[in-house]
Image 1: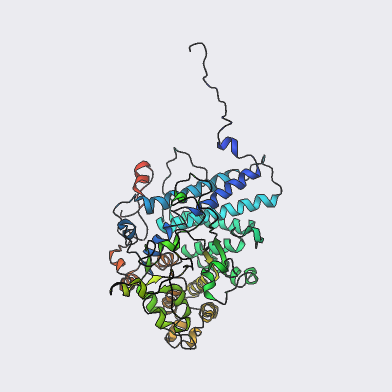
Image 2 (image 1 turned 135 degrees about the horizontal axis):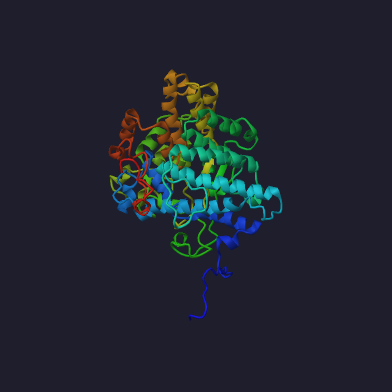
Length: 513
């Protein structure tokens, strides 16, 4: 053993993958980019947990989950900062996606890698920039001050917190570049990839959260009155936005595509062991009514009551209510639809108690699958035109210190699609200041967005953008008892998983935790 020495010998292991061996070809970069898409199908991202967290913290959703910690994390009660099922999974799996994207972006401009064409290189880069921005946007909506990592991570890294301003500024830069690189549309075999419109839509949302109203309005103008006008339009049937039979319609700017093509067991989405794990969503099981599935998230009753305040031009209830909520009085409120069935049962067949008969369950995104299946394949519409129209109205109101004719037109397009009267002709919202005054219009816009976009993981970011002022919190507490536990300058963001803070001396816990 003493006859030779191997000091300094460095022989690559050709039987294993490494960053030094892998990033050599266009196919390698395509595979890396596909791995970033693959992170949509994890329990900490869009397969499961993020829906409960975002909808539960907002005032439209409420959780009575039997898993106590899951429910408490939607009620601003954070006993264990490192609770694995919610904060740690969301944090870890978003950063896994980001690190995968960083590896692609670290090598996309390597001069020695040969591409079939410059266009292919740009398309891979544009998609990856958009995907990284998408994951970072939701991390920031939840945590505000997570580390901004823009290169491939290593085990020894100890990054520090980044400010919300720093993160949003970088996302704005990246999405602006992505918009230049991405196409107006993809062919039928490439649905599920972001387009130029996807980039402008996500960029508009980042600008709005950053209170950069002029820049947000410019992005939204492109979608609504610019080149996007020939690409996007509101669908006639509102429910088509949540029906698996009408996916990728004209209202969609981006959808996460789900599929039932694979089935490998109960939780194979969560262990990274099977390359053919499920590509489906558990959303339907999450928000199913009591007596079906998990029932982890349901509707605060005010949403149903607000829908019923204003009738359509022919005196009926808002059709969005029928497809958004399921409740004891549904059949009486919508006799034109006949008896409603959820998973082949009527409300009475569930035999709820008197207290449970007051509950309101989420119907949006439910399907006709019977019996309820653990996984479903209904695409999740992450960005759609109705959101953009109402966000444009919000931006124009801020820019002009009051609603412009265009802002009101955008709101009216959303209203008249479901046969509600134009805002100026409403028989319920009759305060004339709504049409002229900044504050009155904004307060009304909160209602329009709350009803149109309920349970779409949007309401929490809206509440953050509008601010948790004393007045806003008083209004929230009237609608949602969970806000009695809300503390200003603390609960606007989640606590960073404590295990991350303990393992990294440069990472500080969020304010007041």
